Image (tube, rainbow, N blue to C red; front, side, top):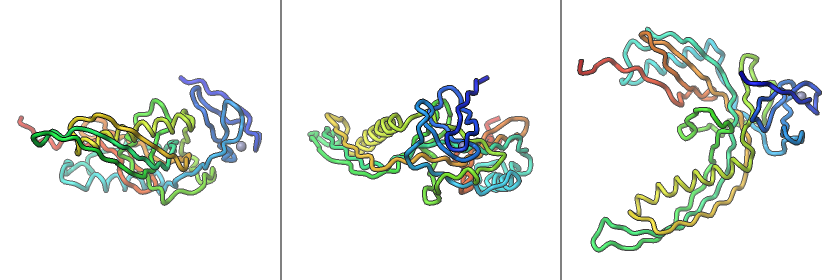
Length: 250
Ligand SMILES: [Zn+2]
């Protein structure tokens, strides 16, 4: 069980509750966002994406996913039962990054091998989940940034849960830089077989703190429980367990 602590909202005086490890918290009653440690107001852009589904409507969206695609059992939509549907606004940091990686490596696919040099130049809206322990497939989530609006607590449904950030902006920036560097190292493998050196230059232009509505779904099919993550802004399944069709060797 986690211990919930409270601070007083300096905007509306209501208690803002937070859990150990959380760094930034948002007031449920007025939407004021505070840096817990200092009590100062959060000064970066705080945005949100809006959820389109009521709990009753989400079932239909899930059933549609179940009916689509030949890899799924044909009776999946009919025979499965949704046992849990929780809407959670997950906190993310989104960094607009201009990244440039200069590299030098050896191309060994021809004889004799040659030394190659090159440069990867890319722009990203890089997404970092602002939670430490959450098992969320961030790289598979194509965040629909076009729909982002300023954070408004009145748009948060009463049945939904809003999670606070456990990662500060600087940590998120470092994390994004590291992930982009890893990604570029992976891309370079297409061009060189052995990397001699690589130098990254990254410019972070903008940072946005964003709450995105994600439906955490559990369903039961033939006695087993499966999980599904659905983007509440678009209805797209971010990740979903697919029960086997049962056509095995037995
Ligand atoms: Zn408040």
